[in-house]
Length: 358
Ligand SMILES: [Zn+2]
Image (cartoon, rainbow, N blue to C red; front, side, top):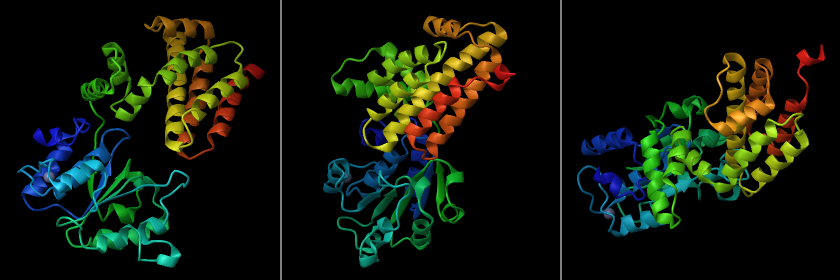
């Protein structure tokens, strides 16, 4: 639809159902005050939120919530400098979004912060749009002070919270917002977006590589982009060699994994994302090994088959390695110290199983 074409990069392809919901609501004059966007990472939730903000604020929108892309409001929205689009997120060095993001520091209570800014008159158009990213990580006190704003948004203000799952939201927040669910993108959509991005980046991309990444993305663009990262792709090959070596060199595996994670920079999200890809690649090898041990069916990928043979694990050993690695994967989201996590993952893999000891 034309609406997508105006939002740039086509990054919301595949979220037509959500877009349609807003188009219908806008046509009926029923845009709500508080929304909670939920869905997996990398499927376009924040992109859609920004596109909706732009459309709602456009000075000359066409029917169907189509932003003109040319008015002063659209230009500022695209440049990320619109005075009436207020985006807040969890600071990288904090576990939660702190209270002051919403109501200001103790010295400036309710004289700064998002809730205060929403009370000001819109600078350009008729309304303000607030987008609260990382809504999974609202501190209890921050959530509490948001409640009143969510319940009675200032005149024509729209507040969009962006999170991943319903379980991670406080019941008080959930009950005050209209919930909008985002599904994983289709493989076709991911491929389409990756190809479009590759087209603008200047580096020619191998269509076969793009297709493989799209297929392995699980419908997440974030994951697909990570899989395209050459450093990470190279390491996946190295990793399966490391984890299938006998005996396992735990220290070496830990050292190389930590180096890869640290090379992602200081920010926690890309570091976590890298470790997730590494652990998932290990699980993929262990699963293939388990299938071979149990059913005799060898992986079709010759490289993977070679590593499965080199490892030569029985079903029980493979199952144990899968469990240890899945546990480590789960801990990533619990904000664990990644170096400690990697060390304990490799130490557990190295330990003989109880069965071997008896
Ligand atoms: Zn416009």
